[in-house]
Amino acid sequence: MVVVISCSHFPDDERIYHKEIKTILEEGYFVKYFTFAESIIDINDKNIIHINYDKSEYSLRDYLKLVEDELMNDPPKVIHIHEPELFPLAIKLKKCFNTKIIYDVHEDYPSLIKTFSNWPEPIQWLKKTLWVMREKKYLSWVDEVILASPAIKNCDYGKQGFRPNIIGNFPETKLFPNTELDFNRNNILVYHGHLAPERGITELVESMEKVKVKVSDVILNLFGTFRTKEYEQVILEKINSLGLGENIFWHGQVAHHEIWQHLVKAKVGLIPFASNALTRIGTPTKLFEYMAAGCRIVASDLPPLKQFEVQALHLVKPGDVAQLAGAIIQALNDSTNSGLQENRNSIYSKYNWNFLTDSFISIYKEYL
Image 1 (tube, rainbow, N blue to C red):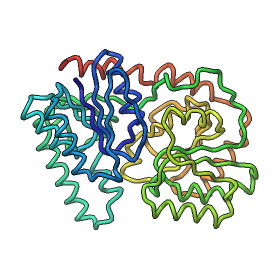
Image 2 (cartoon, helix red, strand yellow; image 1 turned 45 degrees about the vertical axis):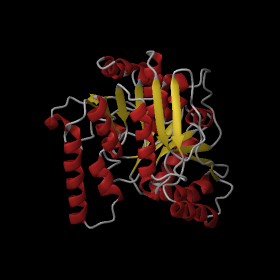
Image 3 (cartoon, one colour; image 1 turned 180 degrees about the vertical axis):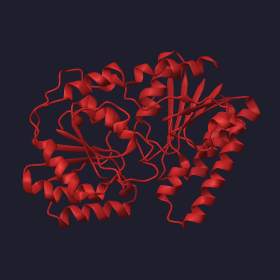
Image 4 (cartoon, one colour; image 1 turned 180 degrees about the horizontal axis):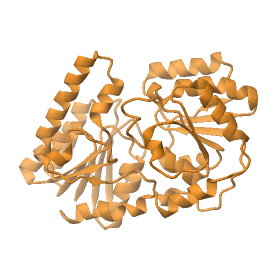
C-alpha cells in the first residue's frame, strides 16, 4: 500500500492527485490518500481511499495524530509526503515499520520565508538557517527526494547524498479539451490560482481601470482562494471603488478538472506576479495551462518565464500597472491568432506530464 499525505493542498491538486496519484493507480498500486483542507471533494474509487479532515474543525496537530493512529494500525510500504510538517509522522512510521519515505518538495522554503516574513533581515536569516538545519536532520530518514523544479535548493540535496528526481509541473494532457479550439474569443481575461499580494492581484485589479477605458466590454474572471480574509476584503472593496463591478468577477475555488471550460473561453491568460524570492525561481503551472487552452499570455518579466519556448507572450515589468494594462490591451486587440496553435503543439510534443511518468513511477517500482 502507498500512502500519500498533504496538509496544505486541496484534494484534487493537479500535481498530487491528477498527475502523481493517478499515475500510481494506473500501475495497479493501492493508494490511501490523506488531505487537510476545507473541501467536500470526494475522490474515493476502486483502488484509492481518500480521507479528508476539514481545517475548520481540526488543528494541524489533531490531523497528524488522526493520520498517525490510522497508519499505526495499517502501516504502508511507502509514504509520500508533500510538506515538511509531515516529517515527524513519516519518520515515526519508518522507525516502527521501515516504511520508505518519499519527500516531494514543491517549494524552495528559504525563498518562502524571505517572501512572506515581515521580520527584519537578521531574523529572516536566522529562520532560514534553522529551517535548513532542521531539514538536514530529517533527511537522514528519507529514501527519495522529488523536486518540482531544479531551482529548488533548500539544504542542497546533492550535498546531503541525494540525486533528486526532477519531476516538473508540466500539465496532464488527459485533462485538456478533446475538441478543436476556437481561437477567436470575446474580450475575456482569466487568472486562476492563489489570490495574494505577491501574485500581483492588486496591480491586476488597478490595471483593469485603464483597460476598461480602451476595451469597454472586457471581463476578468478570477478563480481561486484569497490567501487571507483581510486581503479578500481589500480586493473586493477596490473592485467596487474603481467601478469595476461589471468587469471583474471572483468565482472562488473550482475543481481542477472544471477550470478548463473557463480557460478555453478566455482570450488572455494572466500571470501578473510581483518580483520576489519565490517568483524569481518558480515556474507557474498556469503558463502551460494557458498555452494548452489557446490563450494569449500576459505575464511579469521573470526568469522562469524565459526558460521555455512560448509564443503570443507579452512580458511586462513586475508591479508596473501601466505596462500591465498596455500589454493586456495589446493582447485583446490582437486578431492574428499568431503562435496560439504553436503553443498548443508544444504542450503535446514536449511540455506535458507524459514525458515525466516513467521517471516518476520508477521511484515506486524500486520499493514496491
